[in-house]
Image 1: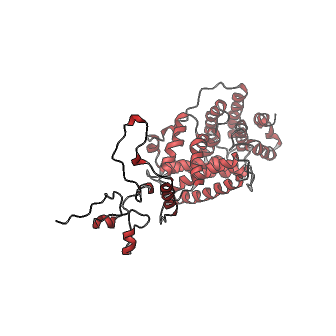
Image 2: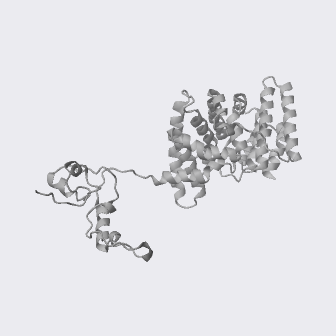
Image 3: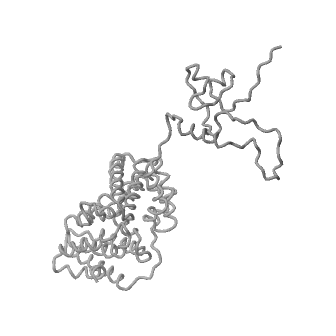
Length: 393
């Protein structure tokens, strides 16, 4: 009887050798047999190259007790063998493989570690922005571009070295792509994308304010720029109106809870709001075009948002909340430079100045208030005494 010559089993051989049931020497990228037969050599599993190739030393049959503290000869590898294996790894020709974009990974880390906190007003909303919004971004590219853009903008503020211009350029590129993609979906909002749409629209305010403060920005803070941010931010309200109940009952519900925190109100702040309310009534009596009801809501909402600033001066809640929910009538009055609308905005600037340590807010309150002072007629100047004292004194 003729016996086949036995050989050690090839656990990680190529598919051709396994099919023919022959010993594969497991050379990478092509084994010797496939090379000789001029066949395509394919390995069925991604086995680390450390397990490929022959071992020059057979396993020892004499096992040593683990208590001896000595390593079995079966697992020892000589320096020459190790050098050969590393050479095979380095010289292997891999036709395909994932390419890591290290800049985008750094931006995602920046979002998780710091940038998301910019948009949070408490721990519940912080968790939404940190995790849930990022999960939505995995499904909607425009939101991911928005997150990467705002994170890059944040890095451009944090970095004082030569990389500042690089991160600003990256931020603008992501923002431009995001705005384009977001605009295309505004007419097609449903439950599958409404969370992502609302999240992205929330980024618009922060990016608009923050980008104007960069050294490379062609236009810094101004009244016109602020009105443009308000107008663009109204897209958030359009998104919310598309699926209001769905959003309020979803895991994004904490974003809709804007219950003002309990704070100790300074007398001068309460007096400023009281004067705004009285002036609103007077304007309604004197000017036929004045919409008293709209301004009642604006003042009430501003008072609620102001509580967040008093509790945490660097909070973006007032800056973003006011921009997102500014009524169309109010924006029209601002565009036409109606005096009372400017007085209301001047008070908004007073609270913006309180939040000036926030990297997105900075000098916005001071610059815009300066423009308002130039625009208001002399007999209206005394109505902005409170914000002027907050900013200039």
